[in-house]
Every structure is written in structure tokens, then in C-alpha cells.
Length: 240
Image (tube, rainbow, N blue to C red; front, top):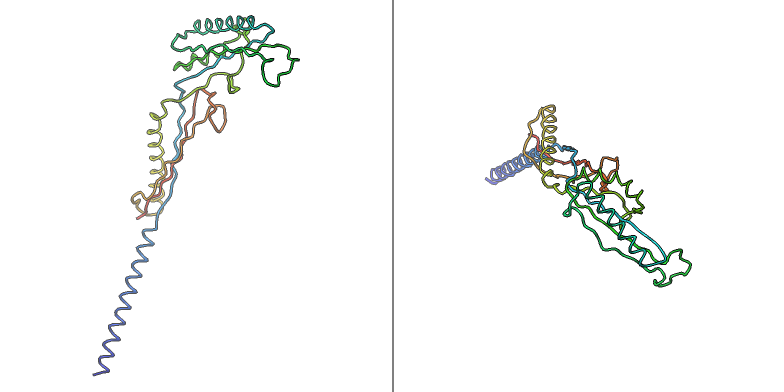
């Protein structure tokens, strides 16, 4: 009786071990199958035109007489305004900043050997959605220089218009959709070549949309009217 009991117990233990081994084996198989996946990248590019421009026309004068410097700056501002209006810009496009005249001798640690005591600056801003007209006007400032206007850079040391893309959000969604379609096509092709079936999406990273100019730089400094948008999105799909 004891021998039969021990035999029966041994059979139960063996069966349990076998069942446990089978379950573990099946679990590893499911893990390997679920681990089958493919990661693909979807690329989308688009060339677009800027939709807004800001152009700062800075000018300067220097002299020994305060009133004369101020009068010269005022005359220069009138010439700039007349030039812009002749190019078709309206009052809503133009902003004339207050003139500034600085007494160099009144500054702390000022030196008395300055060639001119007074230094004056002025600015006229053009803000317009007519980006082509702004670019054209910026290339035609020779008459102002010939009239004695000393054009210079803005407060940040930049000259020429700065072009912006204010409708970026309207372009963002279609661009990301194109990158998604591109990635899906690559994933379908890979699965077909591997003899597998494409499963559900596991992970996705839409990436960052980069904006560059048409001047070959890897960044957009605002000087290009035409912009290139580029995005690389990453997707991971299961394979069945």
C-alpha cells in the first residue's frame, strides 16, 4: 500500500512538472512572437513661402550740433517714408520709431577726443504679409543711399527683411500625415518581404519639424523668403 501511494505521488509530481514545463515553454513562445516587430522612419519634406515679413530700415547721423543732427534724421525719415509709400506700402504696413540723439560727451567715462559729439539714429519698420513686395523693395534701396540716407543694421546687427511662417500650424498636420503614410508603406513592404503580416502600432514618435531656408544653412535665420520643412517620424509595428 505504501509503495502504491509513493508511486501515485511520484506520478502526480511528474505530471505537475511536465505541465509547468509546458506552460513555461508556451510563455516563452508567446514572448518571442510578441517581440517580433519592425521599426521604420517616415520622411516628409515641403517647400513653402513665408507668409509675413518684418523689415527694419535703420539710419544714422552724427555731428557737432544737436539740432542739426536731429533735423538731418527727420529729413532722412521723411525720405524713407516717401520711398516706402512709392513702393505701395500703406500706413498700416509702416511704423516710424521715435528718433534718438545721444550726447557722447555726457556718457560716463566719455573721452573728449570724439570726432562728433552727437550721434543719432532712427528706425522705420515695415510689417506686411506682402512678402514678395517687401523683398523687392529691400533690393531697391539705392535711391535712398544716393539721397544721402545712411542705412544701417537693426538693433540686433541684422540688415534686410526677416521672413516668418505664421501659418505653420496649418502645414504641420498634412506634413506629419505624409510622414506617417511613408512609414506605413515601408513597414508593409518589409513585412511582405519577410513573409509576415503587419500588426498593430506599438510605439510612435512624430519627431521634430525642422525649418531651414533656401540658402543651404541647417537652420532658418529668417533671411530666406522660401522655407523648407522637413520631419522624420519613427514608428514601431508588431509583426504577426
